[in-house]
Amino acid sequence: MTSILKVDSIAHSNGTTAATISSSGETTFSKAVTNINPKLVGSAVSLNTLSHKDFTIPSGTNRFTITLDAAEGPSSGYLTARLGTSGGIISSSSYLTHNANFQSSSAGYGSTSGDAFLLSAWSNDNADMTGTMTFTHHGGNVWLMGSELVSPYYPTYFISFRGKISLGAECTTVRLLPDTGNFDGGTANLLLG
Image (cartoon, rainbow, N blue to C red; front, side, top):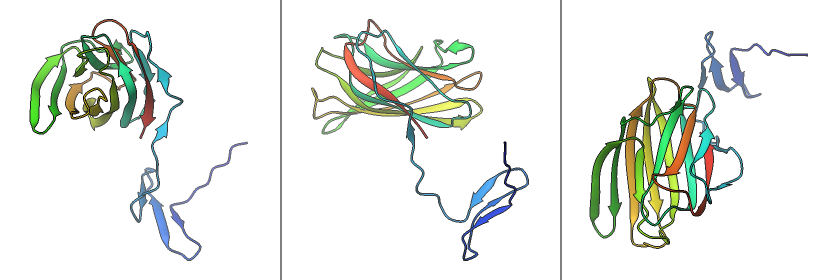
């Protein structure tokens, strides 16, 4: 049996209105909502020996984050990310990435356009990456990416990335992959919200 509660406002027992609901279904809260936590989709997934790892993005998602712990790739090559739609993973040269690393002063890598968000290079087998990649829907199928990574092998560096891609449809997938070879280790997870 299905129940439907029809109200146009939600109030405390003392009469203070907490939220109103318009006739179109839009909810407006009387104060900022501060206790909504993003949700981990599941347990962290091992990347060891994988050529790539895909995470499914639920319909209507406007923000998601890939979390990485000790992600390792070949001793040369780059950590990359691609987005996908119902038509498949986008691998055309429509990704724009600006990346920089910071030590005592900024040492920018500059901007690149390519077939993926180009993140950090693995300069040797010990240079694993830990951090986050956050993707935010800007509207009109435009997605913005921000990433902050660290590598315990290079403790004095902080690596920061920004990027943009315009998709032809709703984002349904994010793919994490080395640009060559397979992952050598580490874990990844998906955080929604």
